[in-house]
Structure formats: C-alpha cells, structure tokens
Length: 448
Image (cartoon, rainbow, N blue to C red; front, top):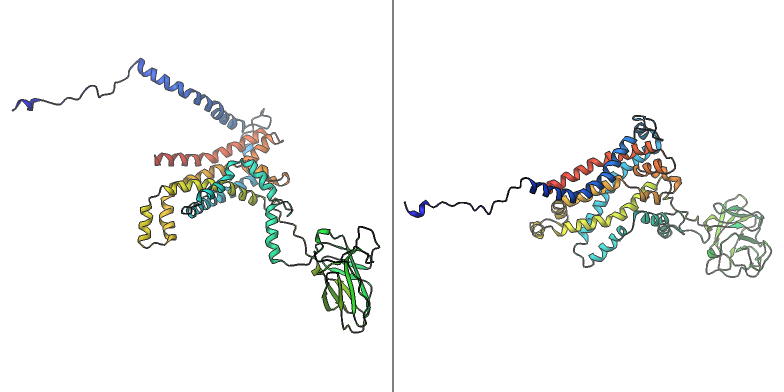
C-alpha cells in the first residue's frame, strides 16, 4: 500500500459548535428572559389576569358578593334581548365574511389589468382610514328617513321620480268651506253648476316651492253659454286678500286635473288647467254638474324608507360594515393575485379555457390561502363587532340591532351595571372566538 493510502481525513474541531454548560448557558437564558419579561408581564397583566378574573366573575351575582353558579349563563340563553344579540351575530357571521371576501375578490380581479387600478383601489380602501365609529356616524346620517337629509333615500327618490308620475302638488287644502275633500280623494265644489256658470276652486297650504314655474296671475274666466268654466289657483296673497276671490298677486295652478261630474256622480269630462289656472268644459248639455280638482293633481310625497327602523337596522349596519372592509379584502387579495404565476394562467388560456373557467378553476384555487386569511380575519372581527352598531343604531332600536359585544357593554357598563351577567357574555364571546383563532394558528403553522 502506498504511503498516501494510510492517510485518513479527520474533521476539524473548529467547525463543531461549543457545548455550553454551566454559567454560559444560564447567562444566555437570563438574557432571553430579560428581553421577554416585559412582554410576559404585559400579557399577564392585560390578558391572562383579566381573562381569568372575568371567567370567575361570571359565576357571581351583579354585586359580586354571592355565588350563583351558572345562572348568568342560563340568563344569556333565555333573555330575549340577549338571544336577539346571538341571532344577529349569527347573521353577521353567515353574511359578512362571505360577502366581503367575494366582493374583494371580484374587484381585485377586475382591476388587475386597468391602468387606473391604483386610484380605484385607493378610493375603495379609504374607508379603512377612519374609525368604525366615525364611519357609523356617516352612515347614520346617510340612512335618515327624510329624503332631504338621508343620501340613501334621496337617491331612491331620484330613481322613483323617473318611474312614478304625478301632479304638480304634494299638499293643499281648500281655501273656503265651499269645497270639500283631500289630496287623496280630490277637492269637490259643493255648489251645483249649470252650463254658463263659472267655478272657483281656491287652494291654500301650498308651499311656494311647489308652484310650477309656468304659473301666471290667476284669471277668473267670463261665463260662456253652453260652457262650464273656472279657475284653480293658489288662494293666498302676501298683500292680503279675501278667501274665495281671485286677487292680484295670486297665481294660477297649471297642470291641475279638473273633473266634471254629472248629477249622478259619474265623470263626464276631464280638463287640465292652463298657466293662469283656468279651464273650460265646452258643449255641456243642460243639467246639474259638479267640478272636482282630481287626486291626479297631487303626488303623494316620498317619505323615505326607514333604514334605521327595527326591521331594517341590522341590514343597514351590515351594508355599512361591508363598505368599510371591502377595501381591505381587495388589497390583500390583489397582493396574492400579483404573486400567481402568469405562465399558469396563460397555459390555461392556451388550452382553450374561457376567462370564467380560468377564474373559477385556476385563479380561485391558487388564491385559496389568501381567501382563507381574509375570510377568517373577517369572522374574528365580525364576532366582536361593536362600535359601528352603537354609532348607527338609534337608542330606540338598539335591542333589535344588538350583537354580543354590544350586549356585554350595555349589560356591564351601559347603566344596568350587572357585571356578573356581563362577564358571562364576555366569556361566551371568548369561547366563540377561540376555535377561529385556533384554526388560524393551525393554518399559519401548516403554511410555515
């Protein structure tokens, strides 16, 4: 054997890490503990201790001086206000995470290829820049029932006006006792009329803004043989005047519908008033007639939808919450979408897949982890939703809009001061959140 064959390679002792024993190992552990100590103390003081104290407190009465066992938890599931809160939270969990994730996904995909996507995403994300309470105040105003105040009902009124036609007025009253009726049934002149007579139909309580722009000085027409004429006017003059008489400065009501009824009450003719409010029925047969300002003259004013009422309040708050969080979902999903390999998408298109098939069978599966992050995050936030409900729902309907977190605050700190039941509600909410948090932690570990 050659001399070189007897040589053996020995590992260098310098490459092996030193084994720490004794003081060195203790010193490193002490340094690590010193860095962790502030966080451990903070978690203990602000998380662990309050959690344990709350759980213990939930088994005592409102004053905290008597052990009541599970009575607070029984009240949680038997009190109507609290069961409503649980049902509402179930609706929130069933609707909001899925809707927010879906809308965020659609917006992220649709804006991926447009040049102004940065501007659009910034605008959609802007609601996240303000607090939920402030956003709730904004939507509280927007949801007002009065169309002159609430933007939602104002928009509904604009759309409604395009499809619902009506007369020029929304309200009026007869200026004298000679006519009777209402805006829903019309105003009928009590005095019987014959061919060759003139009818005076004075109306009052008409807001100046409702007077048509083409209205002119009212004119009482002259009697004509074989004709029933008359005038419909706003019987009010700033300079004074006599009710039932056409005075200077009083405007006619153009566009009013006037109906002629015979002695049997049947309608025989209809006319529309001119700019000065006059009308005329010609070639009228001899007999007794009555004239009426028909209900078609009046448009029932749009009073708005009661978005803040007890039946719609939960839906109104959910819409506001979705508006706030859609930007978050869109931005997160767009970030995941930008990380998808374009070669895979192009390969699917090359194989003949339509855009819908690419979206459903390629894009969505590849975005699965990102969608899960958004969905689980929204579930956690929805379970503890509080401030936006408090800011949007008026006090009179908060029982209808109640959620678990708000019920806990109202029970413990909102005037009831039942800290035992409040602690039970907080514990129940804590138990609901734990499985979602555990699922989230498990998913993070699996991805790492």
